[in-house]
Amino acid sequence: MSQSSADRFEEIVTFAKRKGFVYAGSEIYGGLANTWDFGDKGVKMLRNIRELWRKKLVLERPDMLELDASIFMNSRVWEASGHIASFADVLVDDKNTKHRFRADHLVEEQLGIDVEGKSSEEITKFIHENNLINPLTKKPGDWTEARTMNLMFETNRDKIGRDPAQTIYLRPETAQAIFVDFKNILQTERPKLPFGVAQIGKAFRNEITPGNFLFRVVEFEQMEIEYFIREEQWQEKFEEWLALEKSFLFETLGIKPENIREIEHAAEKLSHYSKRTVDLEYQYPFGFKELWGLAYRTDFDLHAHKAHSGQNIDYINDDGSKYMPHVIEPSIGLGRLFLAILCDAYVEEMVENETRIVLKVVPEVAPFRAAVLPLMKKDGLGEKARELWLSLKKQGFGIDYDEAGSIGKRYRRQDENGTPWCITLDYDTLNDNTVTVRNRDTMIQARVALTDIAHYIINTPL
Image (cartoon, rainbow, N blue to C red):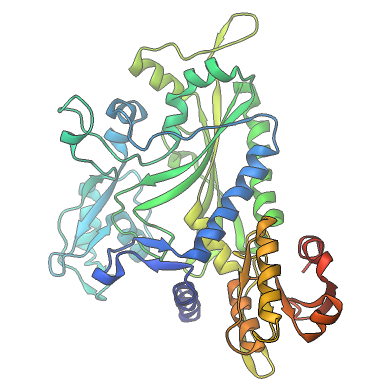
């Protein structure tokens, strides 16, 4: 990562904290590494992103269902899915500093060698023979032997379930619940192929080297779909979902196409369940990294759960014949998407010899659709402004209210919030019931009747 990219990323992280989009977790107690809390504006943005995802990928389609499954599941689920046996990374510790790292990342970043599929012993040899550097101290490390660590968090087994021998895990992904509930979904909803099941929920991974702000954390929110198809449909439907992902990123969220690239996984690097996987990567300030994965999981998961549970979970055709559907999985992390939008929209520009920071998010994502600003608090302007603010909020708009400081400073605060429209009430408002509406991106102002405000802030393009 170049210095300029590092500086930009630091500016964005500092901005997000300063503006209250994101807070460091447990900060007054010294924090807890790689945990983050979302403040008021962050919560509003996350909600808007979630609902846009639901609207475009679920609610507007005739072939989608939804699920909200429990975080805790019977441990046999994770045996069937392969997570207990193989959901692991190879780690290594620097004995001098106690720092822990992904061993494969150390080798790949410092030697340029792809060690996927290599044994722990082989990776250890690469590290020791090449005297690899500790990335944090910039000095050669005194490395332990490389070893595997399962990425699932175990809970206190004595407090969950009736079987004290069963280890209960925090789920590492939301997908498995859809496969486990497939039989129930068929019985209650009677869907016809092809159809999808969407779920938004928390997942947890005991990442060895979390970092880069919101990009890699131990607790995150997934937005996943399992789209069930006939085997012969997979190529057609795979391309359809890939096109839909791009449309959502570019057209709905306004992410710049030049910041997205498409990466096809090589056959030897595919997950054990996948026949084809394509990642859409975003160009974060720290490089292109995975944003949205699209995998053709074949019928691996349903067959695995049928075998391990002993339950008949086949799809029954209209003619009575049984069929095990194949599945395509579009999966995206909400935190990573939030971070991509933040990086994409954060702009610093010179205006009248001053630096103006603007968060140029699309209006549908912005924490507030508009802000109401009385020019003065006295002479009835404050009361009329609050009246308009409450009226717009009751109509379902996210509206901010700000009466502190000069109007120029308030405009700048709202620019940083990403607020598309600032509505200023002045003394003319008391006479003719019109207000000044300022465009965030162009800073052009228009005079609009109070009765037309709701229509204006919804239908006028930035």
